[in-house]
Image (tube, rainbow, N blue to C red; front, side, top):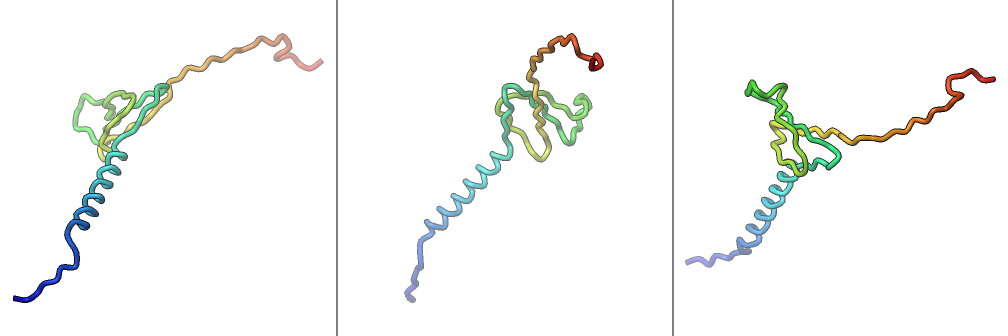
Length: 98
């Protein structure tokens, strides 16, 4: 019987491959999630819709953490904050210079 030398074990290969799979899953999950702030509303659009009830592909609104499929859906964020403006009356406004 011939002597067979092993140059290493399979444990490092399994460790590196499992680390690569874990990183790939984390990157995939990061691209499938977004956050919608409290002063905004998210609108979920379907890129391709076979449902006739979805008008223009709008699926609905969303807030907070939103999980979606980036291949078939888009999430657009619109601000809905209300601003307060004070207009002061200037008695000389609009009059020609004297």
